[in-house]
Length: 583
Image (cartoon, rainbow, N blue to C red):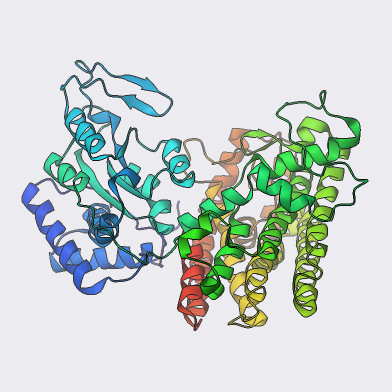
């Protein structure tokens, strides 16, 4: 029998919250209330999902409507909140996202590409009219849902606002991270879905597309700008300049990129460097160096020509860029070593370094990147104050040591997982593995301003809560959407690893039952059936519920500490980062 789920705060609404109000008059009333609410009570440069969800619930309560309409109401509020900022974006900087499922299957003359449906303007469905109107205004148009092309276009700087028509699940999937990053967005949900010949309020979509352009000034940078800045930082030509500075002349060029999938074309003397820099540029979110840049800009923004110059990086001090690069280089080194220790064969959708080149060479590449990270810090001598340089070395070496301690503790427990009963031990491991890297990234950005507005101790406490929450979220994500059972088959739960989920389940089951299960499971290969048994164990012992509660507690504690930061811009960086990390 499944345990009863207690009431507890959740970062996501529960139940069927994606129901669309069937009557047009009801949709109109919710829309009017959302616009009035935002105009009167929701001001500022960004909108957190938590505030958005709370406000949507208030509107539904005022209208005596069920929370089944929560998702639709949130879409209406996003549109109302961001409309003034969308008006400040020129038409040619807007991306209009339309759903291909609105096409008429029998009459459509369009064809599909990797980016979605190409409309042939046959007039068989409303897509022709909407897409034509958007293009005539100068907007870029994609007829696709949840396309990776959307994120790529945004990060490449092709658009500064997104206007979308889609079903509520697709809007949640595509818009959640965009809104969390502070990108102006508007949406009109589908009123009849089913992924075939769907419908929407076409007049509202028309109105959204024709949102007028009103030039504005003083627009603040958002996390979208920081993401673009980081991508610019990791372009080969800029990376070459940063890593080559100060290199002895007798050394070979420190950055040589190759595109091959094997080591056959590598020059042996340069193989370590070539593989290392290829991996640095290969993929990832670059979230940690983003934190460094955002923290620096929040405190030293006046030293930059304007907020949006962050995209170009031309006005940024070289030490800030080098430290941000070092943050990612250290992170990528740890990933190479983690993949070896975890036996993972894929990273960023590609074979891991050790899967391609073998464990010995991969170990050496990881060590090489650690050396390059410290070399970047050393190259700052004479360019920053000595006490700042010492502080940078202190924070990075401390992070390095604590990461190894946390990883070592986890590795020790892997062979003794039948005795892993203490969730607080899992939390301590998580705190050591993740929090120090976040702390180093943020503190580095702050101390380079020469006026850090909060203490290292306060930052450490905040990063501990954030790091623990992040690791718990990773544990839970492995079991999301059980149709397959996990996001990444062969994850920690799948391999009987000492996670917080395991600790909760083992504590609830007791020593004898846990030992019995481990003895049985260790005799079997890691199959889908085994994963389902572990998943059922976590569910029947309430491990998922307890982990969700601990996750929310950690996030709430982080938000409480962040709210006490005196500098508004820096406080927003912390709160936006937390929102984005869990969106």
